[in-house]
Amino acid sequence: TNTELELVNVTASWDEGIGELFEKIKQENKADDPPNGDTGLFFTNLYVTPVLKNIGLYLEKGKMLAVAGSTGSGKSSLLMMILGELVPSEGKIRHSGRISFSPQTSWIMPGTIRDNILFGLAYDEYRYTSVIRACQLEEDLALLPEKDKAPLKEGGVTLSGGQRARIGLARAVYKDADLYLLDSPFTHLDIVTEKEIFERCLCKLMSSKTRVVVTSKLDHLKRADKVLLLHNGMCYFYGSFSDLQAQRPDFSSLLLGLEAYDNINAERRTSILTETLRRVSVDE
Ligand code: ATP
Image (cartoon, rainbow, N blue to C red; front, side, top):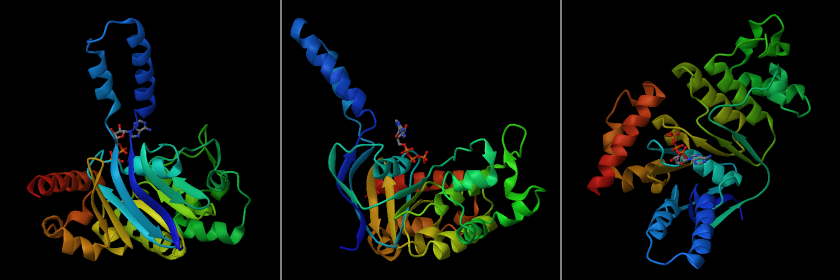
């Protein structure tokens, strides 16, 4: 098939490992302790709090999935699960090939800017220049006397939040992969830069790549091929943006009615999204 990523009724819990350990201890204690203690109840409660519940989706090769949702709804956990860091307790995940992952906050290693983008891969001038341009790093580098050979950390260049974010994105994009997982790549970027990078990098440079992007911008949700809306670890909606308007009219009219939504900062946007999802989840 042409499907690059598929999740079938996937449920996962972060504390499952700990939960299993406690289950074991509980079983062992049962052997010598008299029954009817309340330890069983305590451990059972610890055991069952899935961070993601019954999630299903598929993404074809070369398509973009935008993941949005309320605070703590499991957006990052979803990426960790695709990466294999969070193992589902139920359901199936299928994807083929190599993954490139960009975390919410990228780790900067001591070394030059170029080292931090290549991250151990061979330097390919054409690829490197394309990525630098698409991630809007050209101007930043032009201002440095040592350009991309400028050392970071330990007496070197101190990065702004936005520069750090763009280097993190450049690193993820430079790596050749089949599936790109980008966790909130636009944090700390101003509106204009964000728009440029979304266009040039995510839409153009990566146009043939399969992309999963955590973002709360309506503009991005509209441009993505598929949208996943998470609330409390559950799928509130999965489909195209036009399906969203048809299937979740209350949610859509509330959010689309907010003129300035896309132009306010990401933190406030997430609060609004959280509040909106709470309201419509209660209503429906
Ligand atoms: P935000 O909007 O704050 O970025 P999110 O939607 O990305 O949140 P997650 O970061 O996936 O949500 O968090 C969902 C739940 O999973 C939270 O309760 C969080 O504490 C927990 N969690 C996230 N990552 C881990 C981890 N690596 N280990 C253990 N628990 C985690």
